[in-house]
Amino acid sequence: MKALILVGGYGSRLLPLTYSIPKPLVDFANKPILQHQIEALKHVGVTEIVLAINYRPEDMYKFLKDSEDNLGVKLTCSQETEPLGTAGPLALARDKLVDGSGEPFFVLNCDIISEYPFAELIRFHKTHGGEATIMVTKVEEPSKYGVVIMEEATGRVERFVEKPKTFVGDKINAGIYLLNPSVLDRIQLKPTSLEKEVFPQIVAAAKLYAMVLPGFWMDIGQPKDYITGVRLYLDSVRENSPDRLVSGEHVIGNVLVHETASVGEGCLIGPDVVIGPGCVVEDGVRLSRCTLLRGAHVKKHACICNSIVGWHSSVGQWARIENVTVLGEDVRVGDEVYSNGGRVEPHSEVRSNIPNPKVVS
Ligand code: GDD
Ligand code: MG
Image 1 (cartoon, rainbow, N blue to C red):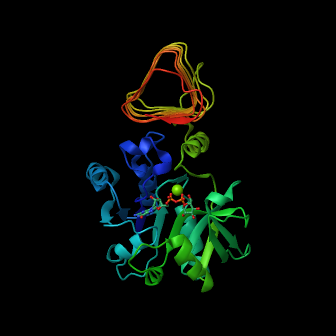
Image 2: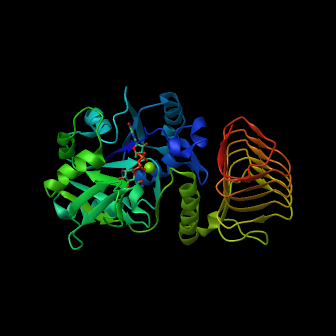
Image 3: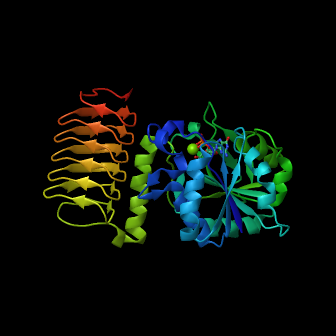
């Protein structure tokens, strides 16, 4: 089977992290989001994955070069010369997706994390005789997603409304699709949207079906949701492979620590913390609901809560970082500095407090 992953969005809602690297390559629980998806696709028998890219191709090519052998699937790039939206890239990659076998192929948004129940999706798709299946999930704030109204008994989609202004329903498009090759006949090679143009067309033909996604789901394309996604992901690790989590007197709840990281004496870590490769956490540090990306350094008695610390950044002694603060790559936060929701651009130094959420350069 084949798959296409839409990796071309600008990732502007995940700044300042996406100044350094495209969104699909940002680490989530110690590996690129994209890698979580590729491994899960491989697991259900996908052998060839097309990455639909639109900007910064050099980062993606580097990822391909480094990963193809390790991941054991064929990875190819389909590169746009202008952003083609969420549907145009499928038309562009048509020859790579269709091989005459008539088999359906997967399409994924690159920023969603879940247990990727692809095997269940394949099973359901085979039962309904439609052209396309989308996975849906329930959320509390449906307005920032594509909302799906479906016939409960059969799963047939009756309406698809992208980012509705008023309440239509609380089941939303999870950004995981299985499409028959015939869907490609509905897409022109131009900037166009699956959600706004193609899905409504398939709904009108009564051939779009939806399946409620089992397990957790999160679009991690915004810092607050990224932090929530880590919590849900770690809950699922606790359930399925608890040995991957650390335990001990100084650990609360679910904590993932890379084997090359070091954690000092007298720290209190957790819940919902990820410590990346090569990170150094000095003595007496308090960490909760946060991610430290590769090479981050947290000095003595600092406290980090509900935040993301970018690659190779450092947080000074007794500093306090909280309320969805995001430090970009290589940021240095001074001793005793307080940040309440700062979004700090890469390669900068923070010497004074950030009392309220704002972008700091
Ligand atoms: N190749 C390519 N070219 N990819 C693109 C382009 C483009 O021009 N524009 C966006 N993408 C990719 C993004 O990288 C992402 O993987 C996917 O398309 C969706 O874009 P987002 O910007 O993340 O959309 P969203 O989160 O606002 O909404 C989408 O996802 C929701 C679920 O998380 C929609 O599919 C909603 O219906 C859905 O509910
Ligand atoms: Mg998204």
